[in-house]
Length: 242
Image (cartoon, rainbow, N blue to C red):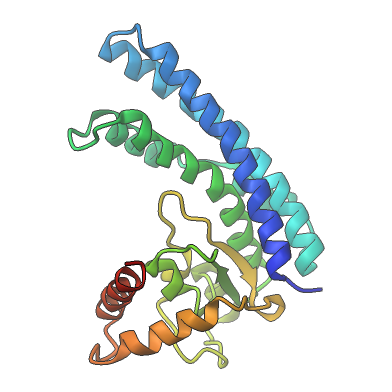
């Protein structure tokens, strides 16, 4: 079995479909808030958004269970699934508070959209990364062809989560020639679509050939500084998009 470009595209499409329903819920929540005072609206958002996000996140975890079993022979694990379904309530509330109150946000709905998207999509990522950790598996970040420079950079490495390192005594993967800190493999941003996949089963998509060329070009003069390499990759992306 292998994780092909087609298999990833189908998985992303299913996650996106669930995400659409989550966003529709959010729009409905904000519509209800229109006639409320700011204090009432915040209280309602804080009450309704977590419930909606949890429901759709659970649906995404269901999809992840099937995906990892069918494409990578990772047996469905209800304990891992239960963990993946949990949303960090404190972090979620903090993000919602930022979306609703931060003066730099011209649209609270738009800002909250990213918060909801991440909370829902993280269900699949949490299941994937936690499954890799429990099975002591090295993983890659599968990134879509329209991924940002940050994700393009991280997609070229192999990772073992911090938990997995504990299981295996912190041994390094000898295949990796450009290895970032393990925590980097688990860093995701709002509207990110990267997912963890078993390194041994991942069929690298053709569009990554260009990313590798960008990486080599970005390394020049960076002296191994990841932050500088990332900055250089962003410049390259900006130039190519003009």
